[in-house]
Length: 236
Image 1 (cartoon, rainbow, N blue to C red):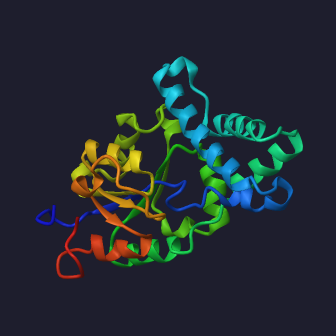
Image 2: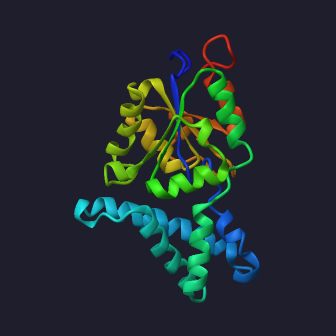
């Protein structure tokens, strides 16, 4: 992949890549008890499962990400001892204002300083993404915030990834796509993006991603991976 020209735009997944999805439950860990981390992991798992089922069962079953996130939360809490409406409301409010990872703002700023426009492409609803971007103070570092609401389908539906091509007026091969979710990175690579998998937690490689994507441990590595020729490491 190193013989390809430098990327002309960079698109980021939001949840798990720019925003810490486990911060919502971490804020309420004392009330949730020792099982909060396992409950948070189950919440995330069910949230993703519900998006896939929604896409596979057809547009007539479309529900936006906030509704599915709330349903997934009820499932996770009930799995581990019962859900109260008060706690569900508190956790949903916390989800809407998830913090960005410490490396997010600096990576975005450096990419833009190098002349690369940036965007989010996410399963999140427009309203949820607007709240998260505002809370994290990332708005000035993004050219586009793209939501699946526009196509009423969830990743990895190709219509979602096409939103990035349309926003930048570029073929996928000229766009870098960055995700910490292995399934999302695999789907983005299959679509044709120049993909970077951010393996924050050192998980085993899935989908042979080392063969189809650049692999980074955090977002700080991105400027070097995506720098135009002569400004750092070769593009992936």
